[in-house]
Image 1 (tube, rainbow, N blue to C red):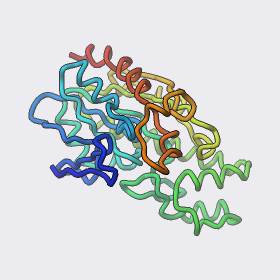
Image 2 (image 1 turned 30 degrees about the vertical axis):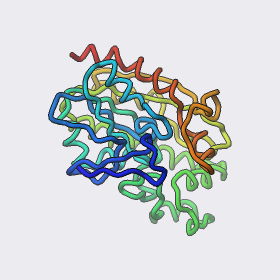
Image 3 (image 1 turned 180 degrees about the vertical axis):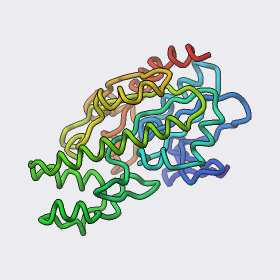
Image 4 (image 1 turned 90 degrees about the vertical axis):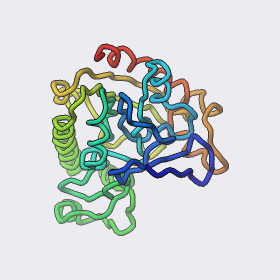
Length: 270
């Protein structure tokens, strides 16, 4: 394992890297030589700008190691294709998997960075043919890309959304089929200001989750508010010039609510 802290030096920003995986996870590093719960996901699992994300709260309630394998900007691409992460998960007794956002994956129409799944790398020929009127040279992020396409307000975006949902289901079904311990799937819907990146361009829906239920021990569905639309912004730990990012994350009380909801299905697995 290697371990370092981000530039802020605050413990809530600490990250670590486990052997076999190129992803950076929420620190501090966990000893994995005892039974543990693997908590896998993106920004919410990582718990940016909060001192105790829900895996840490779960750990205290269960009196059992809950390894936080949350990674910033990590989508279905990084989670489903990383053998190192899969090995870490398969070493656990139970797994909590936060359903990743739909846009962060390479697909028929565009390619994303293999670890920073929020990064748009390039359009495919199919996307160029579908949108000959769009210049992609200055697009660097997936949500920027989808926002630019959605504003066209025509049937072409429905084709993009359909492909993303189908690719997401394929990837998640494949991933769940490779996970040995029982999985509690966390379907977390975060309400944010609509002005923040225009909202979710391709949200997860119930029909998508239903296709995954047979592969999971249980599904926990929750809605929480980001600190920017709740009264938690003052409880989020952020520095100068970081307020826009802090408004996007969920705060301490949301993490506590998530941990409380996950506790019964995890205990049922014992």
